Each structure stands twice: as C-alpha cells, then as structure tokens.
Length: 361
Ligand code: 13P
Ligand code: SF4
Image 1 (cartoon, protein in one colour):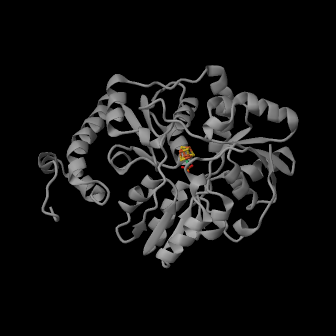
Image 2 (cartoon, rainbow, N blue to C red):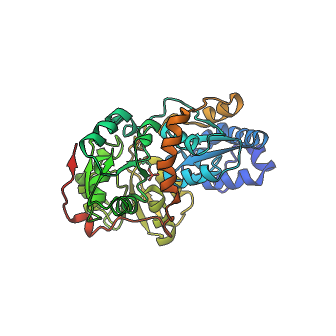
Image 3 (cartoon, rainbow, N blue to C red):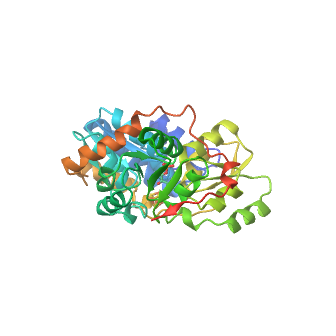
C-alpha cells in the first residue's frame, strides 16, 4: 500500500474489487475501521446475491455503505425510480423510513426492509394525513403537491409528490393541470420558499423544517467565504432562502454531486448532510472538500451491521395499508411519470435573490 499499511490484507489480496474499494474509501475511512468494515461488506454482498436483494443507498449514507454495498445510489427521486424498476425480491432501504415506504408503495409485491425502524425524518414527522384533509377543506380546488419526505398517509391525501430535484417542474405542472395560479406545497417551509422564488405560481405551505438544513445560516456562508475565498459553495434547497441567496449553486443531492463531477471545481463546500461530501470526494480526487458537518441523526442510524442483520433476519419489514398504498401510489407515480430532467435541476440563483411571499398555514 502507498501508505505502508495493508488493512485487512487477506481480503484485499483475495479480492481486487475490495482493493479498489479501499483505494476509493481511504480518504474518509481509517485502516482500523476498514478492518471491521471489509468483512461486513463482503458478507452483505454475498447475502444480496443469495437472497436476490438490492440495497438502495441515499447520498447521505456513510461512504462504506454508499460505495461498499449500495446497488443503486442517489437522491430521493433517483431511488424512487430505481425501486419502481427493480426486479429484486427484497429491497433494503439504506435511508430513512419515508424512503422505504415509498419503495413499498411502488413495489407492493416486494419485501421492503429498513435496517432500523427509528430512522425517521423531522419533515415527515411535521404533518399527518388528517392535517392534509383539513388543509384541503380550507383551500378547496387547489392541488396538493407533497414532498416525498412524508408518510404514506400524507401522500395518500396528495395529488402529486415532488422531490427537491423536480419541485419547480411539479408545482408548475399542477398549477397548469388544475388551471389555477396557487398550489399547496407541503410540508417543507424552506423548500416552498425557495421554489416560490423560481416560479410565477403562488405557494401555500406548512411550517415543516429539516432539522439538518435549517441550522445553516448566512453567517456560516460568510465565515466559509472568509476562510476559503476560492471555494465554490453548493447548498441543498431545504436550507433557508437567505442561505441560497449567498451560495454559488443550489440543487438536490444528485444535482450537487453532478455539479462537482462535471465542473471539477478546485475547492468546494457542500451545505448539506456531512456524508454527502465524503461520498462525492471518493469519486472526485481532484477537488478539495471543505467539510462543515451537520449530521442527520436519522440517516446515521443505518450501519453496515444493521444492513447485514436486515438481510440475515429479513427485518424490519415496512408495510403500508393497501388502501393507503394505492392512493399514495397515484401521487408518487404521477411524479415518476414526469419526464426526468436531462441533468438534475438547479435552482436559478438570480431568481433565488428575489423575495416572494409564501402563505404559511
Ligand atoms: P434529496 O431528495 O435531495 O436526496 O434529499 C433528501 C433529503 O432527505 C434531504 O435532506
Ligand atoms: Fe429528513 Fe433532513 Fe434527515 Fe433529510 S436530512 S432525512 S430531510 S431530517
């Protein structure tokens, strides 16, 4: 090894794929960790083959999961599309509960497993199906666009789902299809405010927040600019609008990754969950990553150990009531059926600086 240390030497010697993986991960994984991780990765990959299972890994998984055992990796939209296409018998969702529910909604005949049932989401927890029913009574005739970061109950009350990658496209489609100039967009206040600045459609939203992205501030961006004046700063649209006003690029996790892989900036900062930068850095050796770290405690409940246990014991199965699932499927499927963007959608930062009112319920 270049660093004079050959972690888990026997596995590396036997398996060139593992050696390649170590080369990729060694910027973010220590040799000591790798000794424990390499056998687990080998075991999980063997179990997947034996059980006809796939692991769908979100961009916020730690690098050993993302690069080591993810069969499909990406943002919420990409993973939902992969779930719909998959012909595996078992889907292990290396992500949070709403993502596993989305997979189950799209694939009712497959066994969908989540390695830790406590992997929730502050946005999904902010609103319930009965809340949406009351909102619809208050605003009759307006379409309800719901972020995928919601429970199946909430999706079942919605007309169409969106993710941060297609939110503007979906909001404009809904306004046009319903023949209205306002839509209800739930439950992320900041995503709604950021989308409102990108479109002429007026938005009514809810006070849900992502507990990870709401913590980033304009002062953080100013501090980063002062410390690393040449760094390009990218942010997720779940951040407050003032943060988007101050950055160089905004888009979904897939859009941020695509930006780095195609533009190859010399130095970059990703204003999002910590693991994202580690995962992109493993594929972008020519870019230096400044890594401010806000962890998503829910995403971080998923580990190699509990993915292995999920496969061995076929636990914890995620189920959705069939009536709820069929109503939720209509909303998710409408989103999936929209033409995918050629490149992941970016938020126009000139528009992002124009303040637009959003009605909060
Ligand atoms: P993406 O849709 O960009 O993957 O984001 C999902 C998420 O949970 C962001 O916090
Ligand atoms: Fe939810 Fe935020 Fe965690 Fe994404 S990062 S799963 S939106 S709490």
